[in-house]
Length: 398
Ligand SMILES: Cc1cc2nc3c(=O)[nH]c(=O)nc-3n(C[C@H](O)[C@H](O)[C@H](O)COP(=O)(O)OP(=O)(O)OC[C@H]3O[C@@H](n4cnc5c(N)ncnc54)[C@H](O)[C@@H]3O)c2cc1C
Image 1 (cartoon, rainbow, N blue to C red):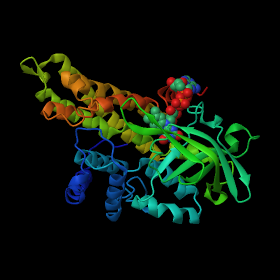
Image 2 (cartoon, rainbow, N blue to C red):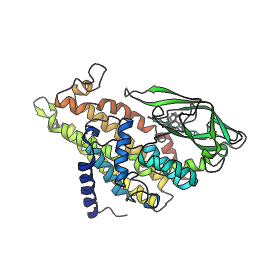
Image 3 (cartoon, helix red, strand yellow):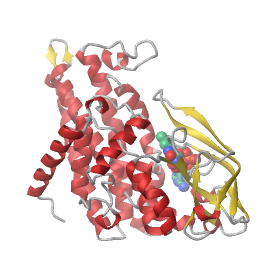
Image 4 (cartoon, helix red, strand yellow):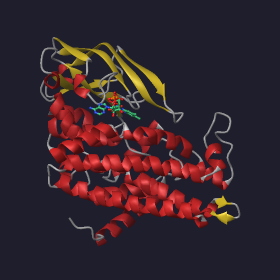
């Protein structure tokens, strides 16, 4: 693979910047400094604008209606969107469900879901994990029993991100109670308005509501909403989970932390001197710069392996996930630490949510919440322990 800078990439970056300057509405811009999550209506509005530009699904190849960008172009796009404060996109729909529908969906399913996914009018959540079935996903117990041309779904999902605001859910269910555990699983698309679905919030340590428990009580789902054959859910899931190794690093987030640290290096003071004059700070900052650059190279390496359909992509993706998520945790904690007293002030309790006016407080706003949220990055998308097992298996083939 080639690590030399791509001259065309700079022109691409300028093109994205111009687009963002001209088309990103000011009232949709989230301050760069915060990790605030986008409201649902903002996600939809921004998705519509991107879609008009032909950039609605940055990771899709052109044969499926995407822009056909290289991995490097996608990373530049993500980075520029983050720098501009653009709302996030519906990642579950774009990166997980979309490729599944393109690969396994019937023409009717594609026609029913893809246009609304592209326009942002239909938002999705992912119903895989259950109490006791997270890492060991194949042990899931939510069942779907056939009743004529419907399945009747009963069971519980947990940690369902954004279930409270999603229109539909893509769901793993057990359709065969007798078969070996992986073999009895099917993949269903379910309208969240179907009677029998209850969503209960789980409030997380970052003081936000994005996680939920989702209960299914005799929920009737048309058989035509099953993607792939009955019992094919596990191989579809493997396809889905293997799809986006390079994006698990969240490289734009790491680069944002670096920017914040560079600002703090001159803004924050250690007594009378700027923080950068403290050797221990300068050394850690330099180390984080080097580690972020190493992650950037690894992202390219994993992407190249994926493009070549190399069997090494899976294990390399796991190494990337472990290293990048641990770095996210270390860097977000260091940003908060470097804010000194303001790190604590910036944690928005109910009364002080809008109180901060000083630059340092503004710089820190939302960062403590984000630091807390990043504790979860070594859990979601497969825990670090499970990733390490994948790496060990690949190395030692046990
Ligand atoms: C913020 C967040 C968002 C999420 N969003 C979604 C979502 O939208 N949809 C969804 O379906 N799920 C979602 N999840 C769930 C996520 O996929 C699971 O939390 C994850 O797979 C771990 O499963 P678990 O929580 O059941 O933990 P467990 O699997 O019970 O693991 C508990 C501990 O045991 C360790 N462990 C487990 N098995 C092994 C093993 N074989 N070897 C060594 N150690 C092991 C784990 O590493 C962990 O430390 C989300 C989770 C979080 C934190």
